[in-house]
Amino acid sequence: MGVMDKLKQLVKGHEDQAGRAADKTGDAVDDRTGGKYAGHVDTAQEKLKEQLGEDDRDPRDRPHP
Image 1 (cartoon, helix red, strand yellow):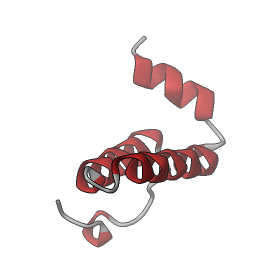
Image 2: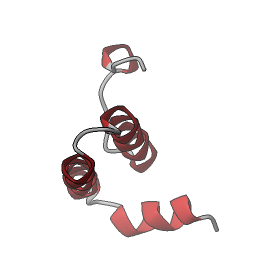
Image 3: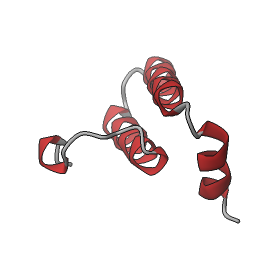
Image 4: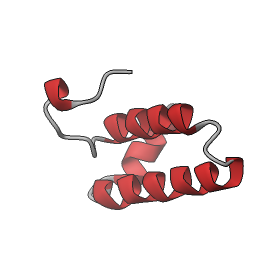
């Protein structure tokens, strides 16, 4: 079982909370780095939300990198 599988099991039913945690963590990284890596952080947040199933928007509405 991979790491993502374990994470998915842990957050099952709490995807919205996991998404908020990803946002909060990303904001903290942006604050600590002065926004230097904001694009990378945003991409990582989006990918994590997609993997955890929190991002249920239509794929056509998602921003393109």
